[in-house]
Image (tube, rainbow, N blue to C red; front, top):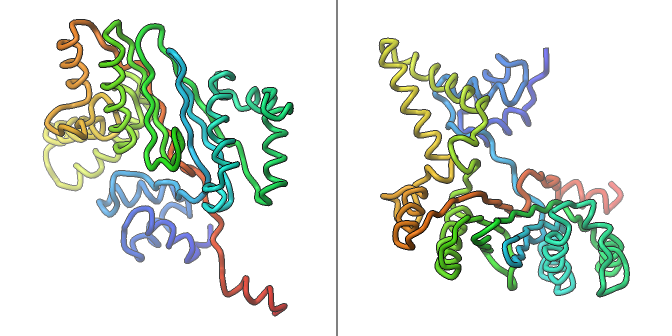
Length: 308
């Protein structure tokens, strides 16, 4: 049997908000499996529906770049926020988005891209910057989206310079509508995406396995109420609809007018502009998501420097 450590209990408590004893019991019941422990707590009604969010710890910047009907977003990480404010680093990140667009968002192609500014590959330019600044940096990820006809609208949240900041979003709208008006609509939806962090574009794109997983959680919660099976089924259906409204972009309440869903706002815009508008894609990069920062023990660090 897996030993349940205090660190494991602490991690589960921080990710679910459940009590310390409940977290320990959940880990015991699931033999230390963190994901199963989260589900165990949810089934008991002791944790929120959302799974643990990855701790955002990496520093650096996100950048976007749009040309014509294409747009790219990129994330470059640094060890400290101090370096993220460095003009050399910021220039590299801004250029990275341009290179990402030329490389279809493929990191491997970006690294071998010949940079006209320095006469070296983009990876060699990064190596030189690391040597000059004296801190490790990583070209972490990139993505590109495009439309046949319409616009790709960019948005940067917490901008530290033009087109670079902490959150970068691209929204693709397919339409023959006036591009200026379409771009304005796209920017507003991109701002919504930055704030609401949807996981899926529409209901059809939701992973069926994810839906079934959520249904099983909802069913366990409903059964605990002691209600008849037919009522439980309706309760689960209602919870699934709510799940869609939380994670699906088209189904989310529009942040600028919560009485409307995003899909309703697009439908109204299409009517006003006299042509169809299709929300065909989006990308959202938040700095550091999915990365875990090393926890520093200050006392241990001081002791090591003193040779103790």
